Length: 332
Ligand SMILES: [Zn+2]
Image 1: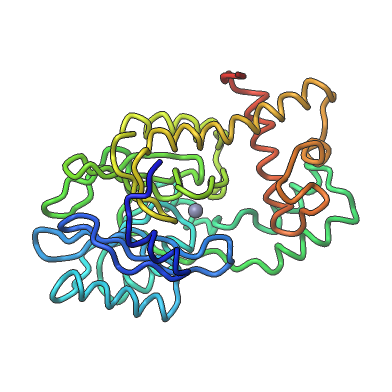
Image 2 (image 1 turned 90 degrees about the vertical axis):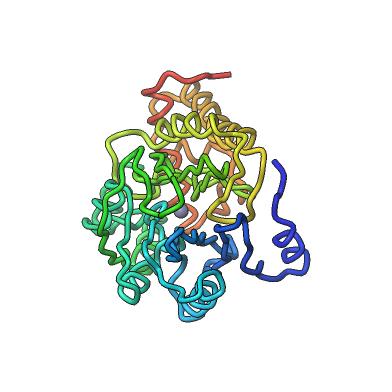
């Protein structure tokens, strides 16, 4: 993997937000800061169509400062800055939080995958909703003394995004941008309706949170799905690997080459955890999710996991356990 953005490299060396960057003649990337501290910003992409209008991919976290930043960027890339369409790679607020405001202000339609649209309509956009949490805490066998901490977190979590989607995208659809042939690739895993966008003419793959240069994204963080998010993810990595020679334009970090290798690393990161889970399952008969998670290695240490991190750890453990139990996979 190689960072293809010298501007981003220079900015991060100085500890600054990267500037608006021209990626191709008619493609720009814009860093939009987000709260939380885990990642500093998400990346918005602007496609300037042959009609002079701008198509916005993932407008970013909703804040007045980001709104002003986007408005300035639009004027910089197109004389009248008219937005003609909006596409969201997935339903997380650091990617589409500002889509509602942009849609209202511009009148441009918002397009997202059908699974994301359905999840948004169910207001099913949080990691877990409170009713589901109670049921899950029972199912995971969380000790009584740790339940308050998890429930407290759930009480404090923000409400799901309220976002109307105008156009439902499916695999193989082409975005309506004159002068572009940007193809929708269904890549479920991170969320059930996550998409990547492929531009064969320019050799670009907009990867959203599917493949990222500096971190590995979590799985199953969208609406509920009958399929296993890890099984989905591994299949989605296979789809992207075919375009491993394309330049990757990710949802966070910086653009990069060596997408194929990074895709493999991303799958391997998850499969390594699946092997660890398989080893415990071979040793311990029918462990609960709590018991299983406590036997795995965690960066912060098992004892150090609290609140959201703990909730997320249990959720990821359940996904890996179900994957190991139900899928045939390379147990290298
Ligand atoms: Zn995400």
